[in-house]
Length: 536
Image (cartoon, rainbow, N blue to C red; front, top):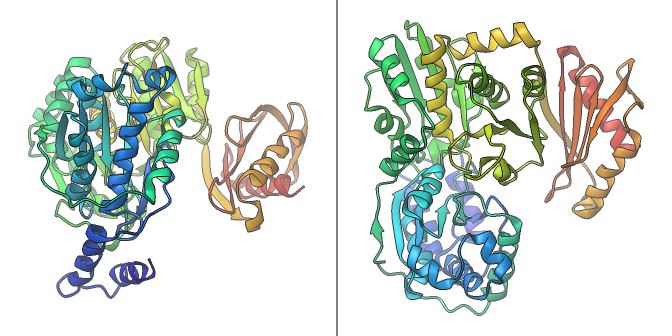
């Protein structure tokens, strides 16, 4: 593992030159293909991730594949209910959808897992390079039993990962992932490495399946978007950061002339940047869009597996805290849809204020997209018009149970087409009607001895100091607590609608602090007040 760590350090060094230093990458790939070293698997709701060449290897992916099969063979009736099928024979008949993002050895890792399924007689659909929402739509449209997505999402280039979704296409719950974790670790030491060979899988067209799904579900008003494009007053800039969404907007929109594509080349190292939809990475979108003189402008940046998106409209960056509120307001006031809005506890309360005035219920959940399943499922009553989280993930009415950056892009275009407003103009109108919020996110480190249950307990103890009607000193002002939420950490909401959320990291000696206020000058005071409560 030390050798791999040193290789990755050189690869990610500013001195790395792709023209001369690619043998370093080839060494990593060779280790990933041949290493026999076992790894510790922790299969959470976002899957399992590991460093390519050490933990994440062909052998260890074979183990995980075999563990998932064993889960199906040994499943209880309750577990089969969560998996969405009745027995192992149904898995064999309905089959597995498998694919990958653009990282190192994506196809080879898929072959390692799919080979295990093939030996068990399971039908396999292979989509090649796929975006996360395309796995969900493929499962539903093909009536498959499950999907396996080879991706670590937005993590740096040394990582790869594996995500498992059951028959409803949504993220697996802990009742499933806990079993995969236990079985994988149980089988890790005894597994005998098998050379990877070709797999007799059926090739599918994930983009076509995805668009067919959106049309069938009437998720997006494509006719409205086409009219906007045909008017010739739109500039659309999309930055894929070399990820799996490259080519998707062109295919979904008929390759319009207004579309400018950025960072579409093959590059599993992402040009040396952290491949996330961050403010820093938006710079190329800004430059391209600022050069446009068109009336309507929309820029977007995606993460590598297409489940996160952030916008720029030529005047400002629009993160998911803002876009989620825009999207929800649009669904209620322009589309006249009926339902609820779902958001994670760490997400802006801007949408709460809008929903309250519109008479719509807010479903606030712990962090994690799987928690939106009760309102995104096909048989959900009530249904979520929009479900979103502050970390740039979104889905909505009649869409997949997974976060879907492509849905976010298409919905943004529909909003512009229907309302005649750029996103920033729409946001300004909401500010004028509902007031403005200023969200921030920060944190601090604690002693390593607190990691895990002790840190959770210490954070939860804050709740005793912040019961409704109690007063807390924030800067020089005492604020009265209006509401206390303990869904995921401790969220304290004050009478003036400002709030603070204190959450423990599950794996690191860190406490995460989220705050939001009407007055931007209160940001630091809220953070210090939250920190003070933790240390009391």
